[in-house]
Length: 85
Image 1: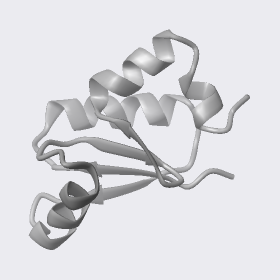
Image 2: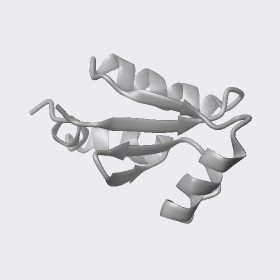
Image 3: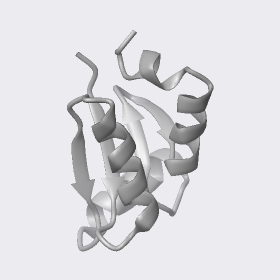
Image 4: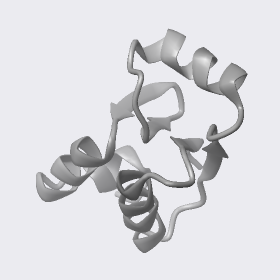
């Protein structure tokens, strides 16, 4: 099983859309809310260089944000990355 993690902020509409897509896939994932956890957000920013959320990882691979995972889904790539195919 893949280790899927999404970093979010509770007021972010893109985060909600990305979580919704992952949920619709029926995969287990860990949501890390960094709204009030600046240390966790600093750690993930150091990994990716991104200062925005959501940030989606499968195992240690950074897939990007909301638009990125939706693009992967349209291309038929996301299911394989999530371990569904």
